[in-house]
Length: 243
Length: 218
Image (cartoon, rainbow over all chains, first blue to last red; front, top):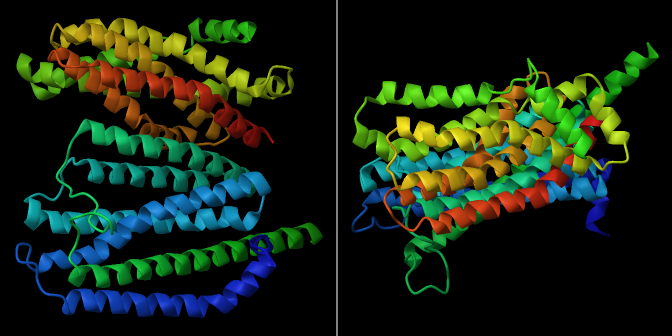
């Protein structure tokens, strides 16, 4: 039993068929628990009022946006090194999900920023690097869509993902250098002196877990779709060849 | 490698090679921006570093899709791929040729355009230095993007979508160096970081671009 068994599409489909109801169920439970607890059973902040509660969407979405890129990086590396199609397809499947999380992070941030900072958008390092991350996602998705041959597309996007990771990382720190911003630092670190009060932190952890499982669910679903569409294409090609 | 470099340079300099196109575009940007934002010297001086760097970036982008596309179409790229010269070397030479015909002229003409945009006197040396150190990275990143998109029909659009985000660090450090230089601040740190990006690109990107070309030629 090793993880490489799932490189076999059939095995992957079997296991994911079994796992999917559980994973998606867990995602729903965690999301409902985290969000309902967060929205309705936490007190309003003494300064921010109820807008503080957007944190339960904003922080998990932002964390998953970065994690999704990281997952794509791992998938791309596995594809380049071991040529497992499932991993390339999983990376492809994760990209739109990651982009969506990026957009959710930016939009919820803007909605929170309007009353709190008095502006929808500021050229703050975190906001800027997130916008740039979104651009990287766009380029990656566009390249997948543009290349016709599936294996070539997987190769090219994998290389792009690896090089893009380096440059996205560079941008992150270049932007810090460029402008010191409004955005607060990390507020969930366990060891820091100051962090979010436990009242807010517990539901936040739950909704982060919910977003993580949601991401897994969506990537599984989309990977299955990709595998099926690949199979359909293979079948149609065979029929044409026989006809 | 030298022969390849000479060939690329000759092709670029001959009629129809597109030499000077980027330069003309750069000039256009420097002329259009004052027309757009108004002729006040103080405002122009403030935005000049950014405008010059953005202009250089876009001028670089303009000629990227030609880097491999023509050789790909007439099959020369296939010959280069099977030649004893490693594909990494081919990419490096093509990027160098691109830099010599696009980047270097941009560096040389930039002070004149700085004058048009009333850049502060302290900024000129830093403008030259930052463009000189930064444009090699632009050519290499562009070469990588061009290698990724070489087989595509509408490659140019995707090329810019891929390449421009990767230009962000260079742009930030380059413009920051000029801005700090113009007001007499410490411009050395961003300049060194800019040079670091260029050196890193020289070290890594030929390999990535060669991998992309191999995938495209398969």
